[in-house]
Length: 516
Image 1 (tube, rainbow, N blue to C red):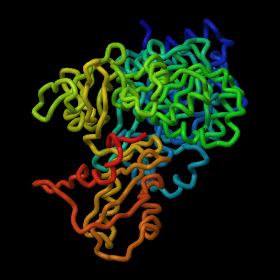
Image 2 (image 1 turned 90 degrees about the vertical axis):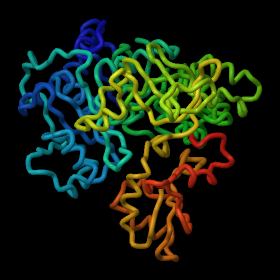
Image 3 (image 1 turned 135 degrees about the horizontal axis):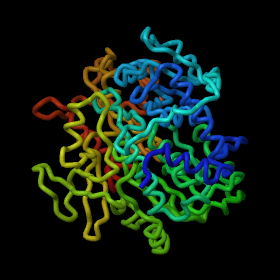
């Protein structure tokens, strides 16, 4: 079975060269054009002295240049490291050092950030808009490297529980699992699909969706970045059949005036993830789109794949007569093909039915671990193949997974993963606070909002003053949206803040301590 990109893309370019591989704004690229552009980028990277296993950094919005550079790197055996658009200089420098990146490519939109960042002298910077890959020569023979399915095809950095991001090593076998989920578990996904990709290439949300479409021989409709109005226009004008979204995007789309007059009849299926969707939102979005829905639960470390609440589950829920209170809608579904799941209690034993514990996963979807972080890899990725997710959940009698909390306190705001420790490290530098804890609290628009709970040293500090102080120290989306002052913060015997106890009062009216 072909699982690596090089033979798959070569096959697509040879068997149906004129078929459109992807559309970006008004420009369409056939599979032949896409392949040739990627080969030119591969040759260009080789001309820089890069070889198999080397890493390159990429910071740019979704666009053809990024697609061709990422794909070209993979064809040449070079590992692309796409970086979060919201990265601050400190995070950017950490990734460059951790991944050993010597060539860094950035878009003009990020020139200001690049100017502020003190790059190491041995890192060469390349502006994307000035690249001329074809200048490396028209001869692109021998630029491709044979790859094995366990070779790392990309490194995706995800926020770290201790403040530093973690580089997840994605293999070709993992990438193939993204395609398998779409091919085996979602309807209407195949070579005739028109697949909306609005997630960023630095996340499995965008990276996995794009290459799943390529493996399928489909046409991807690439969006520069998510914008509710632009996405709706793309669905209508590009006749999108399949879309990958997150629940907060549903709310943003529903908030646009005039969507009820748009023609979404081409849309056959929407795959969503990050969290469940509320019953009232599902009712509204299903009335707008008139298509099928599948919810997917997964992490970057599992290639975005683990379980699925399938389209027929959603059809049963919508036909139940009480969608808002339907318990199954809060489920993450059942394991995808080839994936095992177990719930482990605090003693390390497998928990019984309906008993919460930590969710463990096993399968070809499990990534290799964290780049250059062996100790953390050993603690998370077990030698027998099991992966510790850090999520707390249980399995019911029918085998459906229900997630109830996050062991590692991760906050999901507007579909973005945020870790409290990262923000706390910054806020603890503020002289107005004796102590600080950061938690996620329910928010109707964002799913979860960041709340700083502090023991003040200065009684009159305001939220606005704190937010102003945070600018430039942490990314905008990580700045607290609420500031609460307390006399004490609960801690355990080792001094660790007990965030769960702090969170409980804010979540009393919610069914679970996770919100989409």
